[in-house]
Image (cartoon, rainbow, N blue to C red; front, side, top):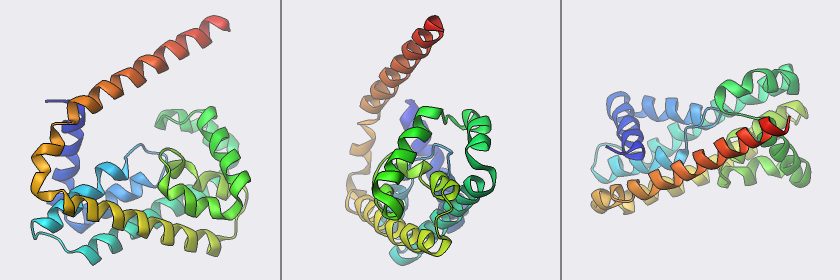
Length: 200
């Protein structure tokens, strides 16, 4: 069984077992530094909507609830802990200084609206709440932008899962391609890390 397929099975199992609670749990993780992609969560919920086990509005509601909870947790980590805390413990969650620097620049460039825009951008989506908290962004603006952006993104992915529901097995065939991409990325990261260490 491929890596990607194993992850898809895991997320499916969580949602199938815990129902909407599983959706909330996974989306809390997705909205924090923890690398759980919404692209691997919400389409499953959409598939369960297609199969009649879930309904669209509850899916979007609970997914967005999870998104705002996870985002608020990250916001307050940045607000009270600041960059030093993030850099000290971020490495345990696959977060490095480059990721945080890029997200901070994105936030500085787009301002408060970055919280909304980031919901549609991989990687940045997981980290944007940290610089928002570090920058002491108004909590009400943060909440509104997060809810609006997350609800739109979650709705899109749920619809995608529903639309592709009848061809779900065909989607799984692409897992091998995704595995190759993952392996390539890992190799590049390893080479980059070794090169950096040798330079030091």
